[in-house]
Image 1 (cartoon, one colour):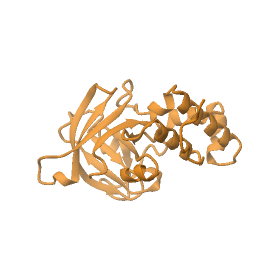
Image 2 (cartoon, one colour):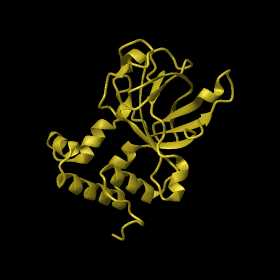
Image 3 (tube, rainbow, N blue to C red):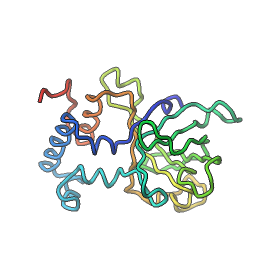
Image 4 (cartoon, one colour):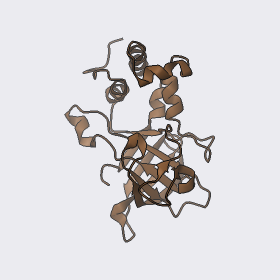
Length: 220
C-alpha cells in the first residue's frame, strides 16, 4: 500500500482552477477534442460543447449520501495496528486543505474483477465509520503510474474511486463477489498525487485528452 500513502488532491480542483496555465491546458484540450472524432467528442453536445463541463459531471465528488460537501483531498497513512495492517490504511477525507471531515481505518475486504475503467478494483471497509456514513465503503483502482515515475518525466500518479454508506449503494450483483458490478458506471471521482507541481497538473489534463506533455509552463 506504499503507493497510496501521502497527500492527494481532487481532480475537481484542476477542473475548477483559474490558474492561467491550467486554463490554457483546458483550452487546448477542448480544441483538440472538437477537432477529433472520439467517444469524448460524441458526448460534447450533451455538455454544451465543453469537455471541462463533462469532466465536472463525471468526476464530481459529491454523491447521494454526501450531497453538499465536495471532497478536496485525502491524506493517507499506513495502519499501525490490527492483524492485517498491511492490507489497509488510515484515510482523512478533507473538504479543503485544512478541514478534515472524517478519518477512518480502511481494510481491504475483497476485490471486484471489473470496476472503474473495467479494471480490477479494491473494496475497502471502514468499520469505525458510523452507520449511515458515506465513508464506510471505498472502491478504488490502483494508483497509476507509480509516484516515482513523475521524477523520471512521467505523469502525475492518480486514481479513480467511489465511496458510499454500503456495498449495496455502490455495487449490484453477487454479494461480496468478484463478479459484482458498479451501479454508477459513469461516476469517476479522481484523486491526483499532491506531489506534483503546476506543470505536472497541466500535463495530466493534457494527457487525458491525448495531447503531448509540456516540457515547461507556457510563457503567457
